[in-house]
Picture 1 (cartoon, rainbow, N blue to C red):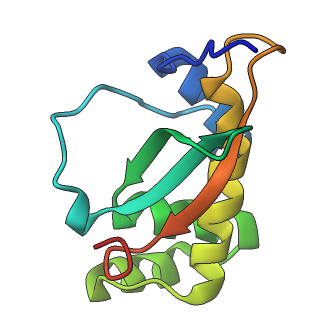
Picture 2 (tube, one colour):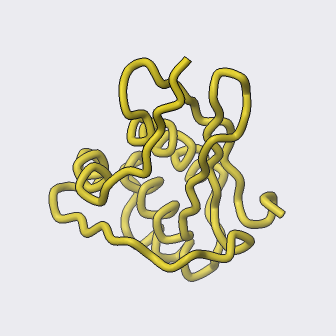
Length: 124
């Protein structure tokens, strides 16, 4: 069984997320993050072993959740200001991360799936 998983390139990420956000997306590397303040998605292989994770800030969770549900930008900005998203927004984050699992698989023989998503208060 192949374990050909990759770190996605910025261009691959922007191409995939353009479907949600539109064409004007900027993706860049970042410094290592302190995970306790991030929303986290875990990705597991067919043996249920953790093989990758994705940490996202509240802005990504709120804006992607709003985009999927066609929620006005003002409401997403209110959630960001309050540092909390609704359960529905977090559910949308799960769906976006599920789509993003495709970015980690190099070829069709490698397989992983989204394990779970956690908010900062549950990821500790």
